[in-house]
Image (cartoon, rainbow, N blue to C red; front, side, top):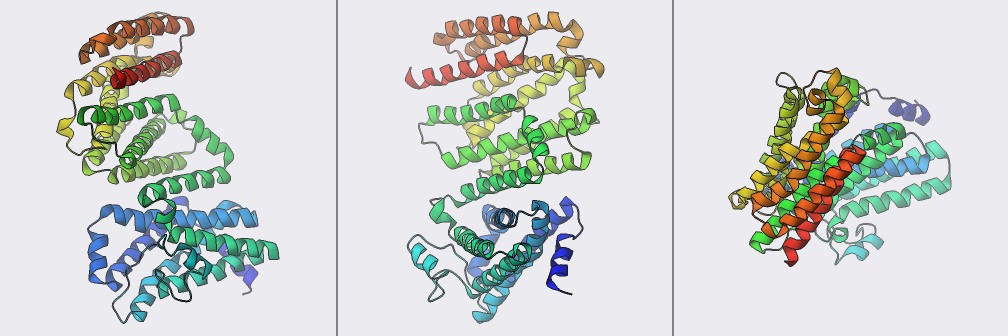
Length: 473
């Protein structure tokens, strides 16, 4: 069989999305197993006693590397990215040979794998990973990188027959491998945080190149105004921790908390669309895949914070499922379903606070209760946009029960009262007049435009004023 037929066979390998994904994860687990078997005792203890290291080193790192090489080959060869993904996937077993080769060359002791340090960065870069006296690269890593180099450039050669393309791919491959081998240099020792968001960015690029129409459809369905609501509450939890404790904010855990909340909300949206089948933007299998991906990203980000945040996120995701899915399907209870929205809002605040300290008992209970009460009431505004759908499905929301025009007046009153209600519950009396003013503006604008966006605008503006005055007054 000649090389062309081999490449065509690789590119036409059959398998659905989850078969490929689960096989990649299987290779990652095999690599973990081999590292445990063929490494020294200290390295075994390190990787087995740190869940965050397991996720970072054995899943995020390899997935990010896989996506980086795939995107690079897509740019060089201009082949469809799903085709290239299959080829790169079939190179993936190379990761398994590293611990075996290292075990052999170390006389059965194994090596502790480390990143390239800033001290030796340029020295090893200019000498091809320290080929003439390495500080960090093991024999197994060097051999795996070299074989990968040959395979990548052979593929580019047979796809393009271009010397320039081969030179470009060779240089790009070396840069990518060196970048992943020295991540702490680029992320200033925030490797986990940088790797997490790098993987997300690469996933976005992959999806965009795979199907632009579906990519923009997904972006449109993210309901960013509502997402910002939960993100703002999460940030408020961090801010309240800062006000009460006077301790500096941990930016890393803040960013992980925001990411976890955002993807938990996207998971909730996808679950809702799956069970409201007429709202599906994609086919059922694609929707399930996105739902699982959002859940995985949310839970992964929470793991990097602390156990308390992880449990709160899991509870939030469970409530989202109960809200949309049979047999309970709480959303069918009409305006009562907004109680769960209030709980979800309070939990978003709790995640923000817990991201800074696992001592959740330090969280001010009055603020938690205020958020639950206020947003259990104010979230009725979401039913205005869904009036036709809810009426068709006989869901007893306020717009369905009262009629759209009358419900606008009632919702204007409810949402407007929520502004001073929040201040009264917090006993923040010096802002009572300001809250009444915001409430009046909110009511007038809602009666005029009959759109939830004006409520969000007033709510976000009020929150900014509240945060500002909390700092300076």
